[in-house]
Image (tube, rainbow, N blue to C red; front, top):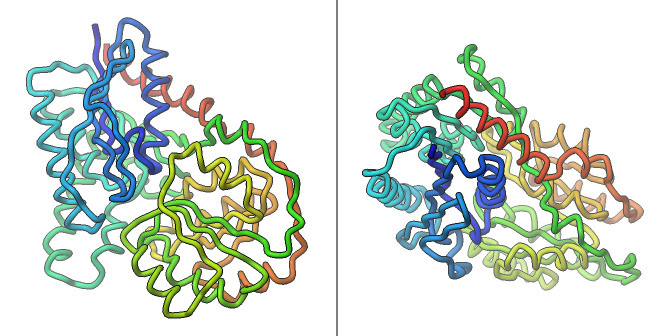
Length: 393
């Protein structure tokens, strides 16, 4: 019996891109591997949001897929909180695998520490490492720790060395976005692939209501409310300018939700409703009842490369998409997502002008849906993982 160690900090039923990606991927990997391979998922109990912590078993067995969820300390999502949570994860993983043998390590990483943990385990045991790179942490860290603070000056060179050693060791690196590929150019011998985010099947089965004829159109944002989204900068002035004509619904949580709610109060905005996160399948009804679907990111340099996972699920609906993004994301959406309006992050004037003057249309994005179905992406990515395992026999 061969065994794959599958490391992901987030897993179902948690609400975040890492969970949405790795939960179905692990199942597909176990299905393709068959009886001769066991897949051990080491992850965490739901902890992404303080307002959404559904019950989940610490141990779960689904045939040859075994899931172990580790308990994390409470945290609010800041840099130090995340560091403490990861240290707890690191210790839990170390204790769990101490007496277990593996043939390969898979690590999915958006904060890179999970990837480096995979590297440490793989290098110590001389095992192949398949790295799923969902963020460039050295660039993200520059956004999180700007200037020449003591913490940045101390940590940044260390993190750069961590990244270099991990990438030099990896047997294969998948990137979530083509925008990441030039970051890998210093590693010309590295085997790479691009398996993007995808559209889950239950979004494809959504039954949209007939086009609304209401006088007040509804704009929905659903997802993380953090520094990376800067909703506190875009929503209050936009909503204020469109009072009486548009209503905004925000579904989610995150480190800057209090800042958003404070900004709405200070501007005396009455047409924005902020709701707690809901299970993902319930979002189908939220999206279907909307007129417009909103994505927004800040203009930090680290955002220049990625493609928000939200693009994929929102494009499954026939609603116009409002995308406040830059860099590769802007190019990707303009090229691939019809019936979308791409505007610069924070461009209140441009967004208000578009909503005020552009005729409303619905459009089914069949070409995009065929290309980015999550089940098809997972099928090919699972085969890629097993190909690395097979090459080491």
